[in-house]
Length: 312
Image (cartoon, rainbow, N blue to C red):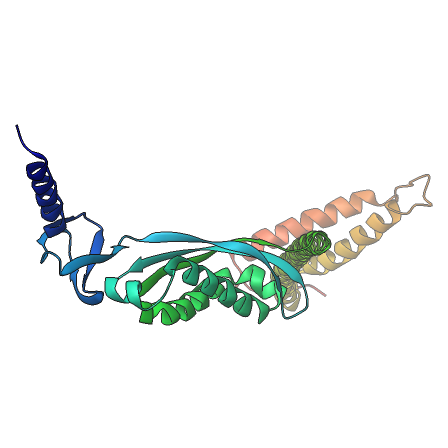
């Protein structure tokens, strides 16, 4: 059996052993103090301390942590009261500075984020605050990270979690957005009508151009036809003139028959004519036409044959 003295010695030995051997978990660092003065920092793993001289000072969390920035009222540059809150992501990179350079590190980071959030948002107008959250986050990150650097803390990210304008401002913004959308719809509709009118005018222009080209082509064809008809008439007249110069009576009958037929056709086409009376010498017209045919045959077969001499 162990006596009381032995038990006391065993208990003291166990306590001494635990005070000498220290195990630092992953994600933490321990500061070591020598009679209350910082001497070194223990990394994760097992470490041995000098008994009765060295002791653990602070247990510092080295993992990234998240701080909620409480909601607060902020007056913007254009005198609008908005409610703003946020969230901050920080990480201790120097355990000694975080342990001995600032008291109550968590509260210090929270208060620093709140004051800088009021400063940054208060220097901007409401429209800028609503539309430039990324710029606000970037400015807050630079300011807070610079302020926490002496504490051995790195600010990784900061985000505005919620931003609430007053209800009357929200209603005005909703009406403004509705009016803006209606304006855009009217502009799009007017632009569509404009494009349709331009397309119709372009179609009418092309149709007019095609129609003018058609009239031009038709006029050209008519002129060509008239030119060919005139050439044929000229050739016929020349042939008849040659026949007349040679003393052919049928050539003279050709012109007489032509005028006779034209006059008779106009007489038959008259609107006032109810009764058509044929002339008595209709047979002479037939004889004249027969003579014309003979004239054409004679010219075609022997255009250079001299005409017979006429008797006195």
